[in-house]
Length: 297
Image 1 (spheres, rainbow, N blue to C red):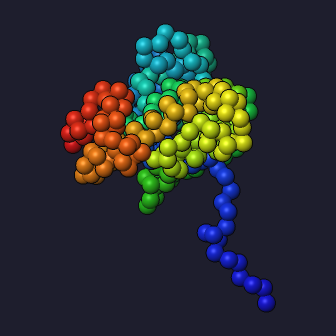
Image 2 (image 1 turned 120 degrees about the vertical axis):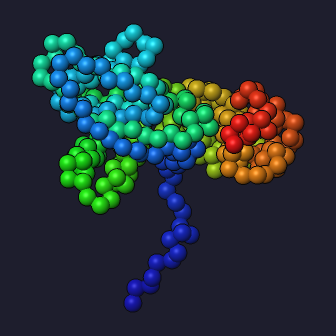
Image 3 (image 1 turned 90 degrees about the horizontal axis):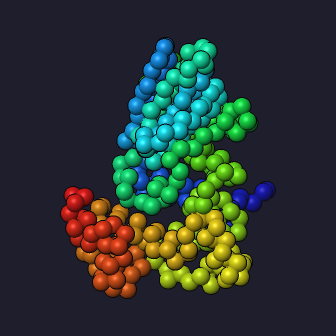
């Protein structure tokens, strides 16, 4: 008789720092798929979007996308996926002489707390995956077809299905971008770096620990100098600064969602004194934690 396997929870887990940090992003900014619509205008048009994270999937033709305040147009065509993870205001308009009228899907992501985390703010305003260049994973095409099915043949649970599919699309686009050559230095690009990812996972797993550069370097099996240089190159800020931001992000969640005294919040996120915590918090958010808490209520 074959012996039953042991408790799977006791087995070593495979390291997946990128997935863990992307989950951290989704939790900290309370981002979730909301709704989707289909656009097929004729003639000249300009449609404005903003205030929520947006996804555009071009099915036919070509459109021009411009961030508000920017003079440059980004032209996207059939098969392209465009994600605006920070919710930057933008317009989608026609392209003169482009031929057949365009048709595209536009999904939105609700961002319940856009100021709660440096994670979302460090992402680029616009991410484009080009279908013609083979930059769109097969999974995104499957998700697009599933969205169309739920839109064209809605049934019980379709709203939830659409929301969940949009969540998956957001994650897949972020993974694809972060693993590609065009990723700018930030937390997610660092998470996908096999030499830096373990340090980011360690920080997010235990932000209260008094991490030193030497400790984090050992986690990554690098020398102190090599680790510090690579961390800045991939993440865009020194390890100590990143750790402080993670701690303060955690503090905003405690201030908003609990009634813990400021002193206890400071202890929970790794500060030895309320005064040190208050100084760091004010430097980052422009006001003391008590006033920030009152404003969120």
